[in-house]
Image (spheres, rainbow over the protein chains, first blue to last red):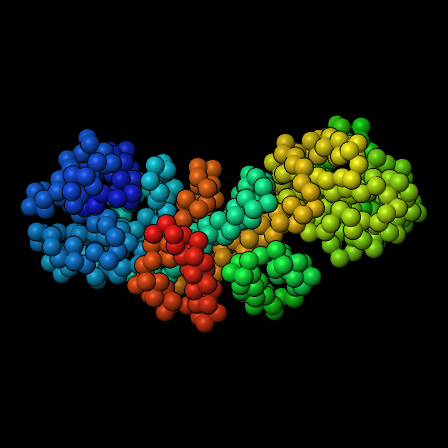
Length: 253
Length: 253
């Protein structure tokens, strides 16, 4: 059994704790939160604590707090030469405090409160400065997920950036589509099969090969018509995305 | 049996012909193409023809050609007072020629060659100037799809615009994510569960409620870090999308 302590009480900590509990290879010892209030949404069958002096001995300490506080928090841990990992896509492994052995355990998914997830399908990107630690993290990741990747800090930062494009920015475009529907009293449901198919098609071909639409085929008349329906801000977005599509696919025409 | 003629031989015509053939309520009489060459990818069990003088009598004539040629093509049809519909999201019903009764049969999906589709899940947006024609189009649409919507020309143009955002633009962001991965020798596979979950989450909540990421939470440090990794063009895209997210969610903070 890999003995684990989770340090944090947000969405990721909550999802991680549920995933670890389903594995017979992981013993989740404790979950830390800044306050009792912060721990109220965390599974109460695990030892929850708010004073770092109460930390018990474990194989891995997983920091699952916001990026900005990881370095400072890791320096405040009353531990020496333990394996301490963070869960962030954007923070370097080396940003962790030198008092302990450093590693990263980054599940690449968007965690929303109350949206249950099948952790086995979530890619977990791991990194460690020590080889034995990397082996342990691999075992821990494999205990909850079928997709484990060895990713260094530089790669992970780019991966996080790519995730912003395919998740945060994509979701914003869904929001724009939703708003257009609402304005015209159209049900957003109409767009869902198209949205699903756009994502599914990636299993058949790379996104570059799946590109369609007026920008790709330089259909200026349709693009001009679209722009007349958009507010100033949305028109700017439409123009830049269309320009970017044409810059990407220009050589193909 | 609703007797149908398809006028066109592209991806949509091909997918439509396959869908009609699976229904016992539709009799697909003919498929027209400009040339024998253009018809070579079309099901050869249906009567294929290249001379409009060979048009037979049918209940519905479905024009499935590129937007720019719909008006001109409809005027050239040797028909009088027949129901002639087009399949475009961006063209008005009234753009069809006055010689015949006008309608629209718009399947809202992105049709790619050789990517098989389950037509039953594709929303079909119908419109007709005559009420009886609308009833017929509803029967025809219901014969191949479980989702039929009555959408007027103004709504349909906005729907088409929304589809550009959630399909064409979203796919372009997938392409950007793919490119970032390729540059860092990262497998694009890593991002697929996130992409699927981003689309799936729309079944649980509206996209506005699902928004996460550095722009939403005004995490300037992470955004600055991301921008250092991007080319000039991609940085511009990143900035405008982040600005748009903040404009949309600004009031919530």
